[in-house]
Length: 478
Image (cartoon, rainbow, N blue to C red):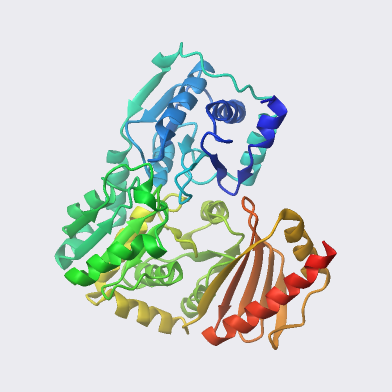
């Protein structure tokens, strides 16, 4: 493979580079990307600062991480590599705590088992900004893909990132309050990196905890490491069977949460964001801005107005929420895909903390989780109803659709007037009845995602049909 073709197969998305193992995600490409990251490090840090390296539970992720560590050592960097697979929020916290030159995390998050990925986490403990990733990508063109020499392994040491992270998490929780509630919790690790972390915290907080799938399985039990849908069927059944207070899970690298209430309902991330915003204000006396992505519920806007808090909308991607957290006091920032962080924590999503905050909210309120959700949605003038469609379109189709909607903005959708249009991330149509529609092309897949939020679920199909007709009319032109 030539250097040019190798570079063409490496494409950075909103949070690093992901690819299929042994296809484009190869040892040579890992060497190339690592050297490009090292070129950025040379401009931003001193080699007196260590570089951290971590990985999730995927096939060969530990070997890819070791290869990257050896490349960095060849280039003169001191490297600290984790002893075992590690959650993304844990290595992010340690990147800041250890005053490092940042961390390389090998993960493909919630992607299926054949995928792996690598992302660079700067020393501020949040996702790399677009400026940083653009710099890394610029260095790819001249980066060597040669394997490491293996001569400088004395510059590499192993470390355990767990103790310092766990100690910090306890400072963000009211441990005694949770202990006093004697919660019965079902926890499904889904073969993820949160095993040995979330269960440790639950048990320390006095929860009667039953765990599932707490081993490393590179095939994720034949499923995908995504904490939603059919992956949670077993957790739902366990909660209902044993009348537990709640069920918890995380995705593959533990930056996304999943919560099941005592009735066996899988809570929408939008509802969890509302629940925890109220919990932080009402029970913990916190304040600050609310931050959401363009695809996340506007009930958060209603909630912010109710409490007189600032509300900010960002493009999709936690790096934009993290950037806002570094600029101002943010009470809670989150996205509809299941990621959030809170005031006082790192500017990176953390599924472990999010799940524990839900347990804490139940402990404070002394009410069933389903009731708490019902109360906060009513308080935010809800409910609103959400739906997402994934349309399989090639890049030319996606470009043409965005161009068409930009040049020919619709006056109404399914008979509802369009009152405002935003181009912050894709095309977002704000409708006069409070509904909205977002058309956003995926940066890494041949997909156009269509998000809808309405005050009635009956409006979903008419809106989807109109959007579909508009998109289909473009096909003969392409």
